[in-house]
Each structure stands twice: as C-alpha cells, then as structure tokens.
Length: 273
Image (cartoon, rainbow, N blue to C red; front, side, top):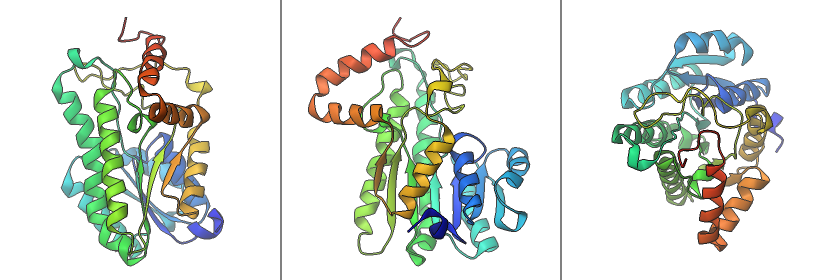
C-alpha cells in the first residue's frame, strides 16, 4: 500500500514532535492525510508548529513529559477523546549524552533511561489497547547505537538496546493480534539531539561534534519511516554506514570495536583525548 493511501485518516501520535525526526514525521504524516497528535514538553512550541503539520481539525498538541507516566496516559486519553482511537504510536522522544562513563554522574544515565526507555514503555502501555483494537502499529525510534555500542554514550546505547529488546518482545507477544511493531534505526541524522546531549555533569553539550550538513536530513528519515509503516515492516536500518556497522558487529565484533574507537577518537573534542 502506498503511504498516501495508508495514512489517510489514520490517527498518529508522535512524541518528541517539536524538532528533528519527530517534527519532520508529523509534517509528512499530516501531508498524507493523517490526524496527527503532537507531543513534547513545550506546548507553546507545538502550537506554533501545528499549522505546518495539518489543518486545525486534523492536529492536536499535547504537552507531554514522557518521563511522567501520568503525562503519557493523558496524551493517549487526549488522542482518543479528540479522534476516537489510535492507529500508530511513534515513540520518538529521546535525548543523548557524550562523556566517558568513568567521569559520568549516574543521574545522567537515569535521565537517559527515563526519557528514552521508560518514555517508550509508558506511552506504549497506555496506547496498546487502542492499537490492538485497530490492528495498528507501534514504533520505537532507536539508533545504530542500539545494535552496536557507541563509546562515550553508555547511557544512550544502553537505552536504545533496551528499547529494541522491549519492542522485539512485544512483537512476539502479539504475533496473533495483528499489531505491527517496528524498530526503526536511523543512522546519523541532522537534528539538535547532539546539541542538547548531556555531558558528564548533566549539562547540555551545546555544540555538535559532527558536520550536521553532511548527515541524512530529518525529512529523508521521515520518508523512510512512512514507507516502513505502510509496508508493515518490523525492522528498518538506515544509511550504508549503519547497515555495515551492524553487519560488521555481528561478524567481527572485536575488529568493529577498534574501528568504532578510532572513529569516535577523531571527533571534535573527543572524550578519548
């Protein structure tokens, strides 16, 4: 089925919808005729962006901190009250980090797990009954770091591995229920996630170590996501580098460890230096 036909009148919740992949996905889904529920912590930002996503009658903004279970429930309740049900949940809200574990305050890892992992679990828990009613889909936006560990991102990699394990298990539990569970792993994608990445003491990094202009755009990433949902895929990995990294990790793990170390060591202001 084409994305145009698939998304028409679908009710889609997107967390982390105020920027990056989340915003690009919300805009694309809206352009394809979906009814879009945008979730993020800053309601003023969502309201300002909503007209670029869909007409007023097809978009809903809900202030949501995914670390709060009550917010996740309120998000789902608001979507059902406004649109009558849920077809797709895109768990995209997430934060990153950049610091050696030896230097890290453990509160940083707890924050990463609360947002990335528990945010996915809590939103999925509350949305699941409605998704099952419509034989819908739940997505976890992870990372190549959820397949092959990324040094100086211990909390980030751990949270993404955890999301993958959670969703892979959920897929098996609902093999007979028609629920589509998609683990979606972009490679490096241009966004503000690296600017906002937490450092060893929990403060924001403020500056990305990568050339964002050379990375896949959030809009391209969103198009891949839309196609994967329309085709009811269960796993998608983007970029040649991402696919090669996962394959090398499976076949030659020790060699891949050394390559990954060398790659991160070349980053601007690398934690290894």
